[in-house]
Image 1 (cartoon, one colour):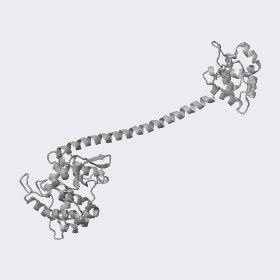
Image 2 (cartoon, helix red, strand yellow):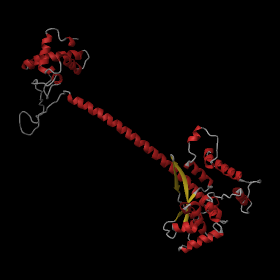
Image 3 (cartoon, helix red, strand yellow):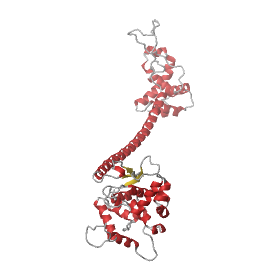
Image 4 (tube, one colour):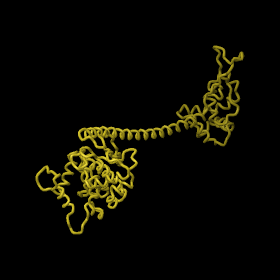
Length: 420
């Protein structure tokens, strides 16, 4: 950036060259004689030989504000950003009462635009520099800065002073620092073992980036000329193009970060839904596992022997027609009729000969199977039919006693609650 537009450098020079500035919290002092200090200071600047007017007419503080506001607006900066940067009072609405007037990102954007076409920069020490210490910066380069603004601000503002003092003569067509201040800084720098022909401070362009409500100042390192001075002919174009390209890349990076965050949220939501669905599936599987199903048992070896465990080709193993001895509940008893238990043949598929072979057990259980089958034919499920039987006779009765009660009620037309 142009050193004449650098607020850090100009503020540091003003405080170091003005003794009264260290005695007042105001930049231009605060005398009690009623003198308009700022107006007098600007009048001296406007009447100087280095100042050139672009238009005829009187100039004042109003012109300074108008110039900055006009330049910001011409660069495309929103009017709200200009108002907030100038801290100018506008007509307040309800929302203005609750919005803090300190906005880091809008302020940084406006300040970066006011830094000039080359954009803002920061002053940093080059890598490997050991002669420049905090003691040198605070006590020798910027003693008035420390007295007026404190040690922390003095360390920040002393770097622009050291850079300006070490800039080779002829790098600019104007003096960027008073000769007396330059001599004092160079003498202090040489006293700690520094070399005047090496500028240990470099100016690094920065790019203002906003990530949500967070302000980020990204350093843009590009090629610089000797002694840390940017090439005035090509450096501006290179820095500007690099800054625009980096801004585009940075914008894409933040977009990818937002997309990644949204993707992670979607993955977590899908994972939660998948776990919920898996729990439902497991519950259904457990419920099915408790119900009687057909289980076919395949023999490991053929009936003819041989010891090789391989069935003869074309042989078919048929399930045995046999009823279980003691079913534990009516659900299992219905499963025996519908599907068969332990690989046995379902009772509904028994032939006349097979029913005769299991005549006693089959005849006692048939009354139950007939009742459930009647309910199933009318549209009820087998579980609902069995629940109705349990409700009629009680779950405390055993399977045998319920079968006996069904046989007794059959002769009287059936149980009243089981009639269709």
